[in-house]
Amino acid sequence: MTAPQLATRGGRIGVGQIPSLMILVCCMAGCAATRLDRQPQPAVDLSGHWILDTLASDDASTLIRKALPAQRPIRPSRASDESSAMAPPNTRQQGGGRRGSRGGSEADSTQAESMDNRPTAWGKVRPQDFVSAFAAPPSRLDLLQAPTQLHVAGDARQREFTPGDEAPFSVTDRYGSRKVRAGWQGRAFVILSQDASRLDVTERYSLPSNDRLEFNVIFKAQSIKTVTIHALYRRAATAEWAMGIEGPPPPVPH
Image (tube, rainbow, N blue to C red; front, side, top):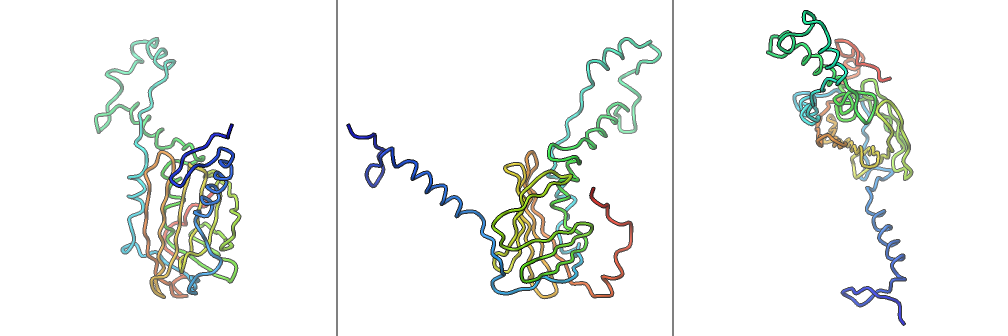
């Protein structure tokens, strides 16, 4: 008796050949992964001090707010209902609580505020803070490119990458854990941050001209709409960079 066979367009394949086919498919899938090179082709240097051109960039705050999941009201616990029912008449809320200027009760206002401050499932931060940490363009960028390293500093965040390193490195912070890879695609420097199916962020830095830096980011995460943001930076003069920006300093991440 011959071994069972599977019909194909080009003939038949024995069941014993299936493991080999699975290995081939896995290899093909691995080859399809995003390729990141060690050097730009053709050569380019992203080094410089860059300042965000807000008029030529997307409104990141608005795009991030639109992508956040809709808030759901918090229902009071059964214990609080029972304690309210047992309270003396003069201490109970009349008509569902004292009305505010928008027609809602003070209890409703408290519930809405608690929803705003509730941490996400991805880290110990609010949804808007979580998305902003990855997708919001910094007001200032400082790039230092070397033959085997690229240093990226934006506001209070500093990162250093080895372009084209095939082994991703792990990052764990207040926003959760993720794997990070970086390298060149043509003349664009690309940073990939991924956490299985929960988080997928692609950053791309390129030079449309010598005095302009272009930044594009695609942010994807569970329960959040995909966020795509484009930002344009202009090269800062030495004196302008040294002066800094008026106003309070950006918050330092913990």
